[in-house]
Length: 287
Image (cartoon, rainbow, N blue to C red; front, side, top):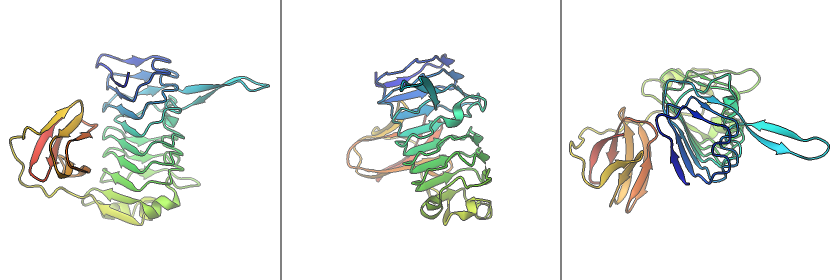
């Protein structure tokens, strides 16, 4: 087993369902309402997680490991994906705040890219706390609130794309959500027309580099898609290309830019219409 995409009729992932399985990627559909205890325990190859967009909150139980050292034996609870070497995470809906989801990705030092989808309204608990290699973070357009500890200890963030034109409220008591190095080093891209709001919002105004989101500048889009550009299994595929390939969403915001001299596969987590711009073509594709 390498990649798993669950069917749209699955509503529950049971306890220990994939524990110790050699899977590299899993897509959890909107239909899943709960994930049981230890469902992904010791999935030591799991690098990519997609929780698809949805309106229903997702209940997460906890992961656990056993300590047998004398004089006590005990099971210690951790976040659901605690011992998975995740690198890329997409969260497309809210977690149930009464579940153990508040520490879902806590202490996972392998995560480099995280996208919070546009259906999510709150980043709560210790969501990405101490994800020390988190570099790129996208915060969806509906996120209105961020817990003070949701990103605590994420000291290597270099790029934040905040899609909500209203700056999310960051709850603070004794500390800021972001580290001092993040305030200095990170570039924060905000929606066009909202720069002033972020520059005057608590916490956000501490960032040294706030910029309005880059737009595509695309005016002429081909109606017919060339044969070397297609969509397959959630990826936009461009074959036989040479040079930069840029993917934009329907609002003209840059999703991804890569350089290739042959074939490139670009994963796109959310359904919708996208614009693909290569050296030779500018076309629309739909997922």
